[in-house]
Length: 313
Image (cartoon, rainbow, N blue to C red; front, side, top):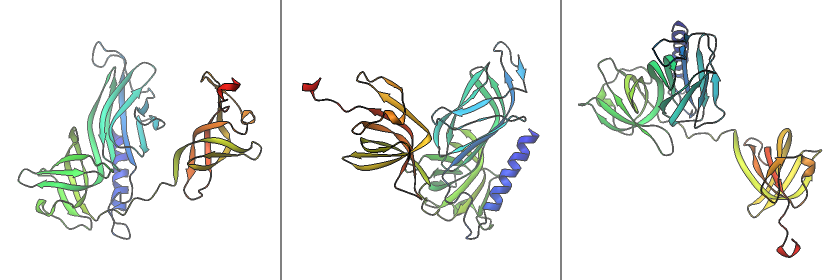
């Protein structure tokens, strides 16, 4: 718990420093990536009784079922952190060699969510609290009599979160002026920090009125899919050109590029660049760098020979 508190203080300090940027922008301005962080304090392998088989020295793998490739393992203090472009209802999975459990969690776009003091038990986890360290959203409905706000996050199809204002809630402008609930009007952008009390319900510790965020910047790298017929191939130079009705694609073949060959029965077997021939049908995926457009860095290339006319079969 001490390790997590020091980590929380570090994150809160960064948020505080970022809160007064040169242009007075709020914390998280222009950021759409999200983070989930926390600490595991115990892993219980027995289901018969609470505390049976509890261990503190087990490494736990933490993943998101809906977002392959984003994962972490706990360090010597049980801490972990997941970061990436994810939001919405997700399944947080904790796994060791002996036990596995999941936790449903709803993540606002651009937020940092902290799970404190997690105990992993067979088929379930327990946590002392779930905190939102802040997400930037826009007020849709404000009811100061009831002490509630409906805040939309920043997705293209926004998700709505219920924010409860309590006596301890600090309401202020981003440059420090203390405000009242009546200053929280629809269409206002606010940053919310608080404790998650239920499905998309947050008990606010702090609400900061912020200027609207700037338009999101396009990502530096995008994952794309490609398909077409081979018009030029240079395995030594690492170049493959594809032609299709949608246009031409230029592939950059790297040492790490994986190749599969598909036969007439639709079976795929490991292959090589040299097995690709002019006219082959090719599909796959890779990375397109926005700063240097024009070539796709292929990480998977699936090829198959062109279909022969029925008269030639």
